[in-house]
Image (cartoon, rainbow, N blue to C red):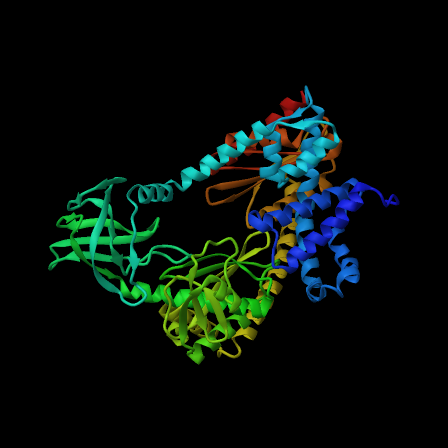
Length: 607
């Protein structure tokens, strides 16, 4: 575009500045919060590039000239230029895949309009399916001097929100109950695993009650409790609330936040509980310890990820429970095996150092100034809990942790995958779970060594040798199968019968696969000249069928019709082109009769 006053050029120039500095500040494209704002800006710029006729990724290429102009004043832009380019290019390529399709949908909708209002369901489909922010659709519509049915769009959005609210109804019920009775619990689980406390509230079938009876499933709130309530990605504790020598037993299956209270969810298996009763609260210690190992390891892994991949890595979600840890983080590509190995090494190195895990209560501002990491968008109290593992990791965290890094024992990554655009996920295990994993892996290797009669050091070479041998054998098998098919084709050609100038053949073959069956069909068509052929292959109770008609006979007989004639008789179906069709069946007992009927069927087709 040579018109430097073109509005699209101005929009793109403005947006590359905004996007580049957002990425430098640690924001990555996503579907929520600051990430969604960034995504909207990128997509608006790409759309203006399309208006200028740009169909290849272009936006990320503007980072370099931006750095030439502003890099000296903002050195962090120069330091992160490659990172910014990679994020923008990846987002641009993703959106390019859907922009054309979305634009076609919008253009079609505009062409079919009976008035000047674009329906809300179209706006919602563009938003929900193609990732078009509403303001992007509004820009396009405004340029056409049309308007949006925003009321209709909001109805569609509300329906989607309602579905989301329905999925989260349980948590909403807890919050509403908390507000109705103004519950509050003091958490004592940082220092102890059991406590004695007074019952302050009870719930049965969603209603506040004065007592619970045996065999009832309910919820119990205590004045203070060692049970950790699910929050910050950490699973809630399980355990027992009891009274006397087992006279009253409430088995806690989960613990959740209910406003400012910790609610113990479970079943009363013996006795009764009333408001005001004193109960012994005891958590499952082994489960808590396993969860603590996973939680502390998550902090170490977060720090190791940032050291290995870069400081753009930010936590996007987490789960820690007795079985594993799961950590979602911002990153633009799969983590390589070498990078995963380095992350594991860094974490296990800290475990070996057995650094003390320290917690400090301090003002939020003081914590942030000390360099503690916090989650963007998370709400924190004025006083926060800061968890430090030497100089390696410092984060705000209210969860439960081990006392020394060495208590984790061993850290092992088991899965790395992608969960969304620009978001990766790592799952890992620690402690006895990691030891069991290593023992199982070691057992697998020992079994392979025994089967292959080789040592541990030579095992990779032995496996590679077997794979190469297998590939060589497969090539030889294919060569022999092709030769066999050719020989069978020559023999079969002699079985063809001529009907009104067309060679007709229907036969069942053995000892080959469907690919070889098709090769044999092609060879027979070439050998017979003018022909209608159907071949069958039986494996177990399944029949494979291929039919072919030479092109000089397709005006009289269609391969698809021939195949359907046989397939229907063997409880099957199929289809294809006039000269070639493929299908199958499920009743081998009727195959011989079906093939024998082909000659008569062809006579009928030829009149």
